[in-house]
Image (tube, rainbow, N blue to C red; front, side, top):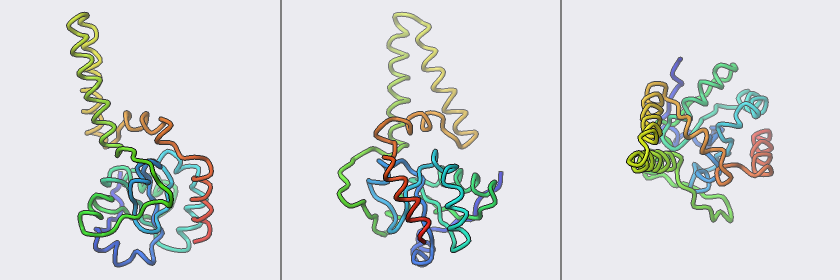
Amino acid sequence: MTHPRTLDAHQASSRLHELIVLDVRTPGEYATGHLPGALNIPLDHLTRALPDIRAAAARGDILVVCASGARSENACNTLADNGITTATLTGGTGAWAAGGHTLHHPQGATRTTWSMERQVRLTAGAVVLTGLALGRLRPAFRLASAGVAGGLVFSSLTNTCGMAALLAKLPHNRPRQGDLEAALAALRNR
């Protein structure tokens, strides 16, 4: 696996006017704040958006963004596998905000969805605690805790997260069809 080109928050800020910014977080995360002008194309919809992203890449440089940089790096690798050159924002929106840059919010956004990382931590912790508590009644329930531990190790080694992929399918993390279509239309017009 190759590592995509990276831009830090300062570099991205100075070039923001010339970049096409794709935010690959869930719609709920996107609503909590995104780079100015960023279009929300969730990671699990990236393949569907390939033709529009390829056309946009012919018109300008693409910067892929997520919360911390892990999902955007995976997105960049997927795009590279499809012949599309991109860059990722080092440290994601967290680094952008920490650098003193403003995060924008969609008009009328009232969603307060937690970041995917926070959702994963809550879910993993809840499953582990439940497995340990129920394991006092039936030892087989401890396997749930062991399964989460194994999943976390695998996640760390592969820089992927199966639990995040599952949580992304929950209704509050899914884009409304019109939102995704609007993002793709805006991408076509850039």
